[in-house]
Picture 1 (cartoon, rainbow, N blue to C red):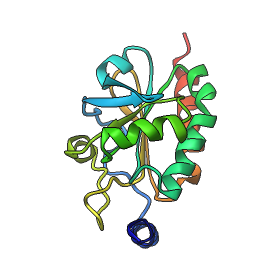
Picture 2 (picture 1 turned 90 degrees about the vertical axis):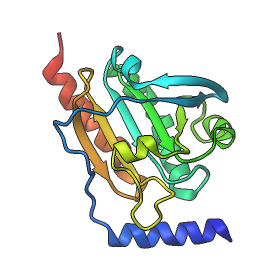
Picture 3 (picture 1 turned 180 degrees about the vertical axis):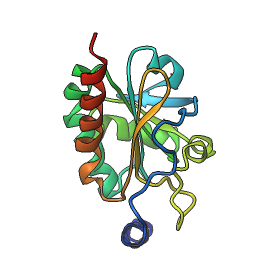
Picture 4 (picture 1 turned 45 degrees about the vertical axis):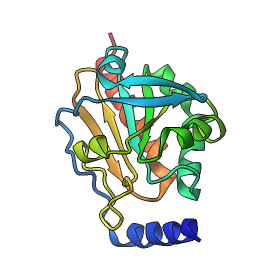
Length: 180
């Protein structure tokens, strides 16, 4: 029943919100460190460390194991080779507890990319990625962050369908301008 109410609330929010991300292109991405899991193994994810390796796709999602979040996790997992070919790291963030994310990282992320727990909503707040109608959840927002920490792309839409295609397109555009 709780999941049904969440799905209905997310559907209502999707239909009533504009598709705009709050942090603007050109802004500096707030740095963070968070407990994350990849393939069920817990580690400390540092955005600063990830940016030293290349661009980062940071995506926020409302709740693990809900329909849209599962679709989005599968899409990111299926595309991880294309992200790696562009030198990018992918990290998902939600309010879920680490115990839930350990399972989600294996089953839905297919052990291909990490997901981080933001139970205190510090990261979601810093990135203006809180769902307005249900503030305990993240809004479905994707950011592409260049290695210098500049946000080069933002996209907010509760429909998970275009997050992977849009972030890959933004990375390809950035990559074509920054090839050595």
